[in-house]
Length: 69
Image: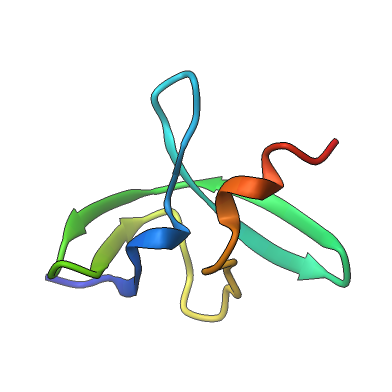
């Protein structure tokens, strides 16, 4: 299986049912990315669609970004 392993805490579920991660674009700039993932182990998942190797994602406090407007 090809993909990018990330911590499970980086995944956020939207009210529409989509699973997203927050990509860090610039200082204090984040954008949501819809992803598809499969479990890897108890703490990590493998993102199979939606991310590229050079993307920087939020791994701690990702659920809090949805609250900021």
